[in-house]
Figure 1 (cartoon, helix red, strand yellow):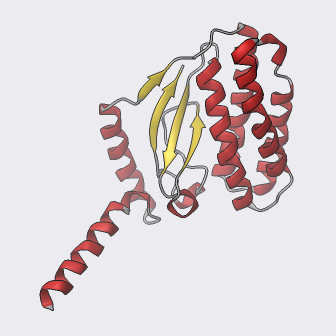
Figure 2 (tube, rainbow, N blue to C red; figure 1 turned 180 degrees about the vertical axis):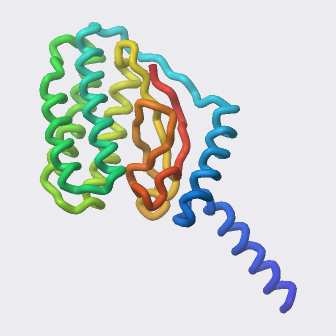
Length: 203
C-alpha cells in the first residue's frame, strides 16, 4: 500500500511540474522561466514556410493590412478588454472588406473564398459579443483561417509568427499569429501571458 501511495504521489508531482511553465503564479518567476524557455526554443528554430501561391503584390499588401489589424485585435485580447476587442474587430473587418478577391484566379481564388468566409463570420461574432471568452473562441477560428491565408498567399515581405498555447480552452489548445517571436498569450492575458511557443515562421 505504501509503495502504491508513493508512486501515485510521484505521478501527480510529474503532472504538476509539466504544467508549471503555463500556470498562474509569481510574475517575476514566470518571466524568468519564459525567458529561459524562449532561449531554449530559439536554439531549435521554428519551421519557416513560404507562400504556396505566387499572387499579385497588391493582394499581398491588402492581406498585410488585414494582418496588421489582426495584431491590434490580438493585443486587445492580451489586455482582456471586451470593448476594445469589439472596436478592433470592427477595424479588422474593414480591412478584410478591402481585400480585392479579383486579384486572384483559379485555385488561389477558390482558397481565399474558403478562408475569408469564416474570418468574416468570426469577426462579426467577436464584435457582437461582450463576453471575452466567447470572443476568444471566435478569435481562435479567425486565427486559423488567417494563418491558412498567409501560408497560401504571403504578406509581401512581412513576417508572421504562428504561436501555440496548449492550455487554451481547458487544455484543448489554440493558435494565434504575431508580428514578432515574443510570446504574449491572447487567450489568458496577464493570467498566463508567456504561456506558449512559436511553432512556425511565415514569410
